Image (cartoon, rainbow, N blue to C red; front, side, top):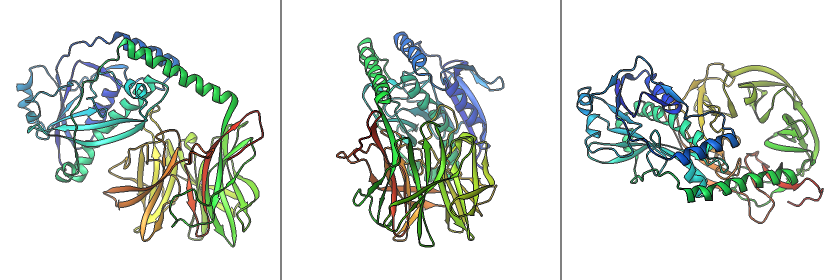
Length: 521
């Protein structure tokens, strides 16, 4: 096992919580033989107006945690104060820079694998830098987090990247997402380098574009940003007062071999007091069933129901089949050894549970828990190459999104309680394609994974990703098709896709008036 000696450049002995998390997770990796801190004091940035603005933003939008809360360094961490000469004597493998917006030319030569610095896409993400406001100010849908490696020859590469959805309302919430993701991305990049090997890891890295200094917004920029945030917040309140967004289904007579288009779809509209979402379609003994999340707005808690369709795809019955004291959704149903099972999304219970069907389709009983004490979303299983694979979105911090981190596990049996985490987890860190959106399926001998694109809003669109590599040591996929809401129809989102040999069903979100029963799709 490769053992790494790591140095960490910091401005002070107290650091923000996100940097403390990065340090802790990096140091805890078994491949890290030791870590040493070098202090390089920095000039105190002014930015008082900006910090006051962020403080007010935090009061207004209540982020779940504060990644900027200051924490002391661990007492047992070796500290250097003698400068670069003392650092050179340590023969480091990696030098993590959380302090310097400009990397001095002599610094990368002090570590065998260069200087590793976080970026927000354009600027180096260092302690004290103003982050999270530019994306809101410039109406950017995506917030980028990267790891840049600068080598002794002056070259720079991007070795890891995560794409997050920009919070369109709040600077502090956008900061929270970015900084907690940064705290996880650096140790993940180091772990992946060890797993893949240095040669392969750096061979697939992309050249880094030149960075810009992260600038504090001036008074004029803040004066423009504040009304923009206020307008967005008031617009959201206005919509909630007079309109509601309702998830419903659409069905088309075609198999999953067909391309992603809106052709042939017709709606299955629920009553106005509820939503239908996350459809999983099953054909059994000549009958068509669609298992769904059904949520009555008055109860604000989803249950699992089953819709029965006639031979023309028209609704016959709607029957609740599984209810718990907590929210349920995404009823992934599958058959194994002649028995039907269901794994509903139960993140509110911090578990991944399996239910066994005792009478199809309306009676289900708890079988076992596959994963415990995990906030997991949209668990999707696949039997492939002699193993069972679990695709699931996990969240490591309360402030992070449930949309952008796909994790992969594997086991010998779908009912196993011993699932092995993939060494490259999260295998996808992209809000446009991480979260599962239905069963994986074969088309022309190739494996495809439907996913949600939540870059513009939750569940905005669908992506179809060709799985190029799937093994216990590697994973890779390529987006080959997309489906986004058509501009000429009252559809604002679509986020689940499932098919049989006869039918394809998707869910859509449509906007309706609270004061009128008139509805047009």
